[in-house]
Length: 315
Ligand SMILES: [Zn+2]
Image (cartoon, rainbow, N blue to C red; front, side, top):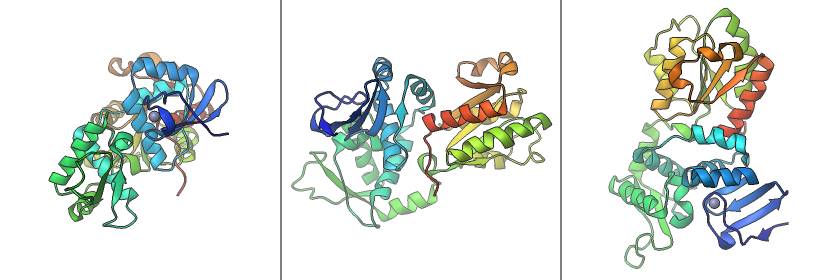
């Protein structure tokens, strides 16, 4: 039964009728928030999220999955830790691009006007507040990528609603810039190419990524002589996230994962249990999927991808 809920959204603190508690299973509650979208969260994860002040980023993460029509995320204490570590700090230029992309997605055709309520829609730009979103809108208009479609004379900017359309230059900009992040479906796999790891790729990493709805990409073993070339960099840039299995401690794997972190991609680290103590000091701070069998790796990696990146519907 759907009931209006006097309690605020546990993620963004929005109150009132815009937050609906759709289902309450005791320990797990499903919310439908006008700002975050739909999600299920456990009570313990709720407390954890509050303490860590993940608010705006978590809100944006949930909302963008919702906008893309992905499965409703289930946020537990475990997945929250994974999500927290994977949330990149987007810079203002990334945020503008994501926002422009989401307006383009909402447009039924070029020239279609999209109406926004900054108070509820700021997560579309991974922003922390409506003021930040309005700043990006203003800047995108200045850059000629976005245009206002409401009456500038009668309506003060940001007063309740704003109507915009993607300008001609905006469509061109989106065409030219590879649509990184949210809309991509490739997962780049960085791992050792030794004979013993072949089965790990075939039986664990590749199927786990595929089952979550993504395309697993690994460069050809022959090409990969532990050196980084332009092809590898280009493939990482084309990916939504990276799975880095550091078993056997290859330098190239660390480099590729480090490069991915540098450009803001989430990296899921994995390592075989007997090699855990050898993990490079700088990356020990990250959570690793620690595995003993290919079956175990496949199952755990699948769960982590679903929690951190989200399961993608097959197209
Ligand atoms: Zn919310």
